[in-house]
Length: 506
Image (tube, rainbow, N blue to C red; front, side):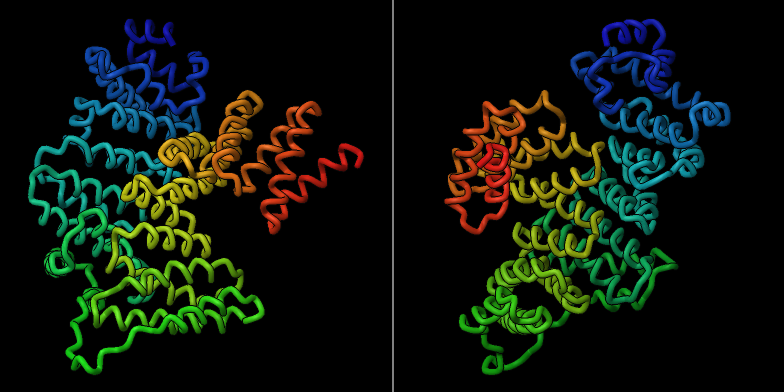
């Protein structure tokens, strides 16, 4: 890296071209993305070097744009798109102002080149430019462009548009909130599907926005009404039918004597037992649970107390989703109940975790990732969301392992008694190669010692010890026997113990 820095001081643009083309050797830095490499190479304590990098990156982008045909023939379209996106991400990561403002001044000109370069949601240079331009806004001139971006049916475009609106200058939070709700209306009003599906998707994202800005229900009702008025006047494509589905429900004026009663504890217990009893068909158990939740919902609507509804939804819903044959109608009902729970308790981490579980059951990975990322942001101390987010990233492939490792390390450090984060981190480290096994062993020993009844940590520790060689097999046998004795229902500990005993010749 030192030799490349010396080259950069002499010929900045040529050094960048060599870096992006892979013509320079950076050693272990190649394990990181190029934006991260540049971030590490140009610390904030060296403003002069960052200024030189700022100008060199813009010059390199201009050259790549002007020599489009030649560079695409040489690199291939996919690599060309990748390098452009990485350069824009580096401008964002290092917060380089000069290039950013030049791009902002000629935004339409640059977008005409960048938009066709999109290959996938995570490989979209035009979106990278929009994300860069959310930084350093000095006025509200970009409001129209953010609302236009939100109208794009792609969910990642909506996320960047909301970020742009959140970063508008000024202290008028009410105005910023109204604009963000208007962005949601424009996005979901253009989605395909029925009005009910559009409204359900809108309400879920609206609930997430309410979680970001905790305010009274009356405040958000007024914001929604303002946004509905703003959007219906400002967009010729807006669907009036969709607007009518979003009108806040008017409270029913029933006499106090006719208010519905809260379901009894016996009814709650019967529904829970039906879900747990695998002899009872899933459809029958689902129906019993949904009837219970509907009773709690009516009671909450009249009394204003949503505790029983939210608690039962998360508790019974998680148990129900452990079954493999839940029908579509039941899943849709659970989705509508999640909407209500998010409206009543937008800052309840259990609701967000159940929302992610509901999406996982339907294999909606992209939506689940968004929910988990929001959960992590809203609830910094919530370890289960970080662990689940890391598990999904690990399943998506090796390119996502560094991010997964970061989430797991955060969870392990912030929650010293959480065994799951340590076990998952150890599993990931073991995947990374033998050089990481000592650290993995340390995390597993911590988890096994701090959580005597956790079988997973003991089984994983034993598996690792068995890999280390025969000298470690007696200790591995001890951990497996402990796990088997303390957790009679854990099959993995017995299977691994049997395999080890067969190796030993017993």
